[in-house]
Image (cartoon, rainbow, N blue to C red; front, side, top):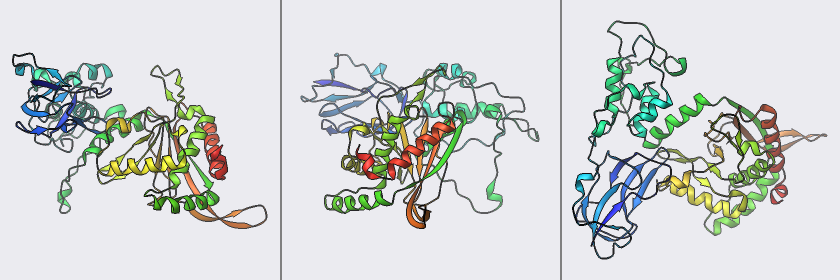
Length: 429
């Protein structure tokens, strides 16, 4: 029996680049063995085989882009019963052909300056009609290039990264021209500098996670009117209780951190101030009210920050959240997070407490409208009405989208959070 193995449901993603073929022709694979690796705009996805068998033919190459239903490979074997039977004749003519070489694309934008004339406006309509992968679209947006004006040299007219580079070069000003041009939204581009004139240099490839997250952060920063509200919470009593729980938890192989309590307190505060848990409707005139509480948290990994999501955090206690935090953090460090593991967040927490700092401005993770930043707590003298006493104070930095949240609401949300963290008993209500 021959079976066609196709790309399964991968959520809302389409035209996802294939960054790795994990099997070869002749390999005997088991059900659920990973066969290809895809790179979405949020994560690296491994596609498992739906059945066991011998790989007879591979229909994809690294560099191809695929969507749900695309043919991956042909399996031979009696146990490959969950796929689709191949209809006799060979369909290889319909398989996607490799459109680019597997050599890595340049890590940085080309150095020629843009043309002296103002570039055409980069419109969503132009991007919507363009036949290009998400990474190429992100590259073009960074250079403020309208893909509708770029001729694609890839298969079926697909626009490749080198096509974008060639378009930019074709628009370059003549040598000796000194006029600087505005970039996107009237922002002048950063001039290229040859640092080798001043000393030894080396080009170091950025990790894939940073290449993916960079354009998303840039987009959020440019589109969202960010404001950051800073506050301090007294966690003296809470941290004493946390240490007791953590001592017991170590014996069972997990840890209880301050972040667990902040997640619980955040959910309670979000219920009282629903706008902080909302998103702006695409028409810009409404807020989308969400009656679920999925809390993302930034996990530091060797390849950069990743944001796993604690789903339905309002239905979980401190112990369950603690164990889940440990599991997600381990998967993030090992590069085993899937797209679904990092999607659906309604509010995000970024903690630098293990490193230090006093405050910072985290970037809102659109389409969320707020993100909470934590830095290291510190002992400080606090006036209790009669004397100064040492208290363990936790800095809080709430960045928010001023279109959805005004300053008074942000202050109330942080005051609620501070009140909840000040007495652990309130978290049990």
